[in-house]
Image (cartoon, rainbow, N blue to C red; front, side, top):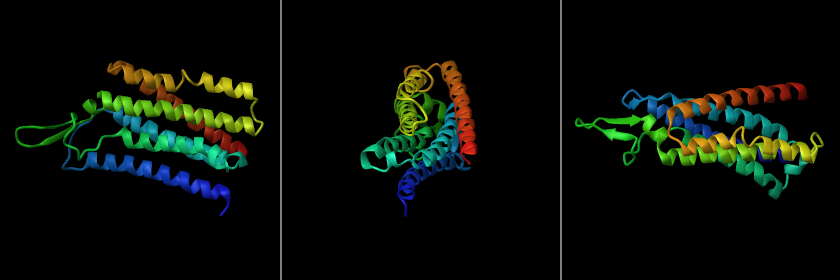
Amino acid sequence: MSQLEYLIVLVSILVGLGLADLTESLRDLVLPERNVRWDGLPVAWAVIVVGYVLAAWWTFYDLLQSAVWHRPLTFLPVLLTTLALYLLCAFALPDADREDVSYVTTDARGTKTVDLETFYLSSTHRRWFFGTAAIFSLLFIGTVNAGMVYDGDRALQMGVRQTLFALPILPIPALILIATRHRWVHWGLTLYSMGWVVYLLSDVANALAGGG
């Protein structure tokens, strides 16, 4: 087994666990016996997270072919980015089986209802989910730029500039979503983030086509 295959196995396990957690949460929500008050915002962010997974998976497959990442310390940024991606998958949708949370209510007949709007707008969810999203995007962008600088595809000054330029594009909007409960702000930045995911996926697809 080559070093690339060895490292890809670890990354794929973490990504697979994240997707499994996300799909399990979705499955629990759509079960016929589950009473759910649906809301578009958490569903939209679940789709965005899947887009992050696709972009990171193919980017890391190309990135890890460089020998610079085949050392414990230099591999650490890739590992931290993958761990953040796993947590994003885990935080995107609620655990429908929990009862001691604000988003699960019980009526007089004992019927439990999972309220996705309450879950999404809760300060705990916003803090953990969007905080992780900010960390993931910063790690992802920084790691990709570092790899391009090492391979000679980008000058160091340009790599630093591109990383700093990305701050208002992805991490800062995530921090804004932590700070506010206004739905119009969340919808605006959700659509904005979805647009960036589409752009990122198209950019990755073009890079893979060019590399092939």
